[in-house]
Amino acid sequence: MDTIPFHHPFIGPEEEEAVIRVLRSGWLTTGKEALAFEEEFGNFLGQGFFCLAVNSATSGLHLALEALRIGPGDAVFLPTYTFTATAEVVRYLGAEIVFVDIAPDSYNMDNLALERAIHGFTGTNVKLKPKAIIVVHFGGLPCDMTAINRTAQNYDLAVVEDAAHAFPVRTLPPSGPWAGTCSDTGVFSFYATKTITTGEGGMVVTEQEDLARRISIMRSHGIDRSVWNRYTDNAASWYYEVTAPGYKYNLPDLLAAVGRVQLGRAMELLAMRKKIAERYDQAFVNNSSLIIPPREGARHLYTIRLRKPEGRDSFIESLRSQGIGCSVHFIPLHLMPYYRERYGLKPEDYPESAKRYLETVSLPIWPGMSEAQVDRVIESVKRSL
Ligand SMILES: Cc1ncc(COP(=O)(O)O)c(C=O)c1O
Image (cartoon, rainbow, N blue to C red):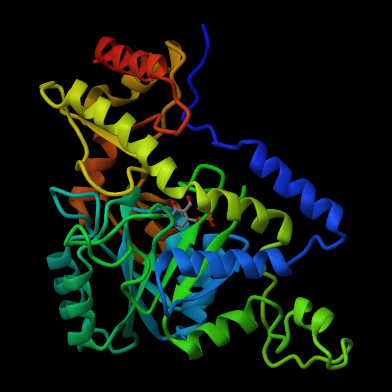
């Protein structure tokens, strides 16, 4: 019996040719391919965005918060229902995290809970100053950015979008701006399992020139000139100035070249995921043992909720024994030892997230899955329930 993996990247001869082109070019690190990738990404999103290619979304989030001058004494609000990358970057900078629960009918942060958390915090915590909100478009499901930005404005907070799952998807109303472009800065991921991939990689997007400049410098050791600029500019190639203790977060051309091909396929890959999701929706919508995910967004993840959570782990085991790979998104961060102990948190502090975690299973949804494979997943799910 063949195994259907949880994920399999969609890579063709064009990606292979792109890698060979760069390998043969004599320039492997960040250079003209990365610049072209940034320009093409900007063209995709529309005019006016600075796009900065980085080696992961995690480093992009770190750079975004650093450019917003988040640091010790600051509080950053973010959902507990996310991957640790969203939160760890806050701690890199010495700031503190305030977790927020998800909404009962969504996988995204609850705007009312967010308001309450900020309101309850303001004035009562003398040691910390609310500074920023990080929203996560879970599984490519767009957050209500109008509501989030209103809240941010009320409390004078910066907003960062963790758009790791959300390329390409429009925010509400359905033809609103792209997720990742509705805040001070948005960050996309090109990790191996993401909607487009470079193996590892990410893109930071902002309309604010000062943020873009800081991010650009800090992703390359705090040096005021990029390596490519030093190579191509008429000014002396050996001279540069270190303006801050920066990081090493640039995206090499080898990966950027793959990203350019994947970017060209982004809408096609989205259509393929949508087709699979719609087949799952149809197969499961009337099944009384589970709840299907919201039928919108980039459909990066297909998360079902079991009505009998006590059977979740044996359900996953049953799928595994039938050769179906699956996963769980997410184990909420407030249950993780580091965050639990640092902030003295209990599972019931975020009841929706704690409950959702126990009910949820992510099924395979990757472009290139055959109809027969999708049918096999559907049959295996029904058999396992
Ligand atoms: C919600 C979320 N944010 C950020 C990241 C980090 O992305 P990367 O692996 O590109 O650093 C992930 C990775 O899975 C994620 O799921």
